[in-house]
Image (cartoon, rainbow, N blue to C red):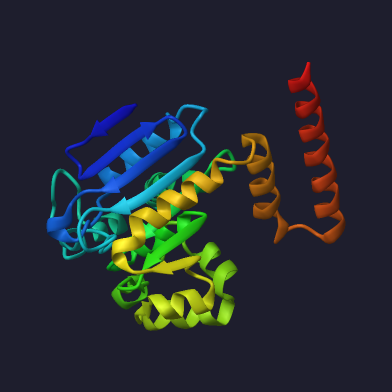
Length: 260
């Protein structure tokens, strides 16, 4: 078992086929910083090949209140410059900086594992987008989502816009983002944003049961299935049929080889 504790407010562990990311700044509702995003990207890049499930959660009563408010308000904290300071840089530097931030989220969609967000309490802004970066969301009944970036004059830029549209549709995604309103657990389940909604005291056990269920099928079958589903929306029907044929051929070859 690998256990990593950082001074950035993250607990990162790998225990056989299950890796865990715990946001551990409960005193600020697990508010995030760019340094945390860089650490997440590094963790994702270094995962051993046997990892098949990633569980992302928050310590305390909230999943994450989003980007640390002090950075939004113009303060410098822990060596991180205020968010608006990016606006003074050349566009190429701004793009490169944001691309680095996005890497802390985008690795959760890789096909070799299934990622689960265990969401309780607030999931705001970057917290909402971190939950959206995961493949599945198990949500406590007290969970509340809000995409606050537009209310601050910004846009969601951590990879959350595409999965949100895929889950709830364009017009509902537009309404959720542009009003920055709260989406509570029951509505999240109705929209398809939440896969499972349970009482807060059942959240950990439900995530554990789901993780164990995901470990049942062979790893190659999960990997290929996830890759097929991720690409389905952008493929024509004929392209998707071809992708299915190719994936199944690889599975048959691998299964036959395992018998030898």
